[in-house]
Each structure stands twice: as structure tokens, then as C-alpha cells.
Length: 192
Image (cartoon, rainbow, N blue to C red; front, top):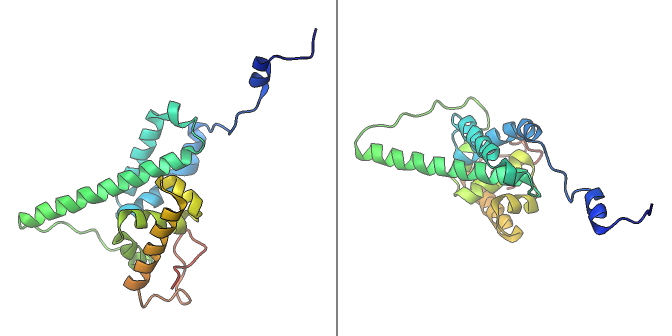
């Protein structure tokens, strides 16, 4: 017997280029993060679980294709962000229609959380800025990770984050990170 293996034997013995996650473990690890991300991007914490569940459903439905991607988590975040942005647009459209009908849309009760003014300001940002801020502060994501998730160049992700931070500074001139806690899920304060 020869110790020499053909190309086929070497390919079969080679480790995969990147580990393939199991759906169940990815679900358990990512679901709470997707709820927080959906809440931050949509601005509606009451709908965040539904949005995260829909993202997970789409992950399950597309698992055969997604599991082979280098970063299934980035795909999942992109889907969650798109669902949250669509949900927000749908709510805005519905609110405008209700105003045209001269009815008052119901309002959600204010959050008791000390971060409500901050997240209200985040909710007022344009979609990509909102997503970049949420990914950076909720999940402590790097510019490269944000770019991958949003499917943009790193320089574009940096611009979205910078503009979001600048807008937050303009909207929250009295916010002093030295006297208030950081954003939940973050080790970093909103820069002044």
C-alpha cells in the first residue's frame, strides 16, 4: 500500500475553510442580540421580538444556503435590519394614513428605562445611521463588522456611524456621559 494519497483524498481530509455552525446553537446565541438590534433599529421595542422571530424564521428557511456562508451572523443581522427598517417605514405610512383620516394613532407607553431619551434620538436617525449606531453600541461591533452586516464598504460604515454620532450629539446637547450610564450593551459612551 502506498502512503501517497491522490488529490481527492487530500481534499476529503482537509478541514473546512470555516466552521459550519449548527442552526440550534446559532439560534440560541443570536436570538437575544437580534431582539435588541431590532428594537434599536425599528424604534419599537414592543415589536422587536416579532421582528427577531421573523429573521430567525427566514434563517431557518434559507439554512441550506446560509450555513455555507463565511458569516451566517452577518446575513442574519442584515435580514433583521431590513425587517426593522421595513417595519418602521410601514408604521410611518400607517401613521400618516391615520392622520389623514383624522384619527389619533395609539401611542406606546413610555419606557421606564433611563436610556429612553437616547434611544428615542437613535430612532430619529436615518436607517443606516440607526443600524450602525445600534450595531456599534449594542453589540460592540467594529467598523469592518458593521460594513459586512450592512453590505457596504468600511468607509461607508464609518460615515454612517460618524453621522449618527454627530446627529445624536446635536439632538442630545445636554446629555453628559460623565454623569449618566453608558448605553445598554455598550462599553463605550456616545462621543461628544
